[in-house]
Length: 135
Ligand code: THU
Image (tube, rainbow, N blue to C red):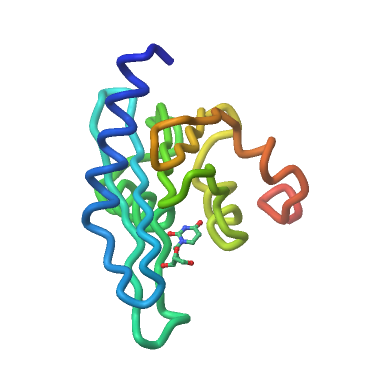
């Protein structure tokens, strides 16, 4: 990924993060899925007073993209921005969903709030999983 694209993806994640609804944790998260034809689908964490009804940014972005007809093979990058000086990894529930809806070779950029990032693939961060291959 070029520096320019890093910046574009980071800015899109910042935009998603600005739309987070996180009055309970105050931890705002932004995610962005970019397709091969350069459409961007944002997702943010949307909390609820019934805390368990909260949806994380990653699953928001994936639901947004899939609801608009995006398929696994259309996905170029996935970005995630935490509200912290350290990058943060997706929660277990998001890992499970990302494992099913992203391909094994999709680049996942994990940004800290300052824009420092690590680039990983789903298998790097979720090597042991329950998925379709277990049918
Ligand atoms: N959160 C995410 O959006 N993604 C994750 O992978 C971890 C946690 C959100 C959920 C909740 O709104 C807040 O961060 C604090 O846990």
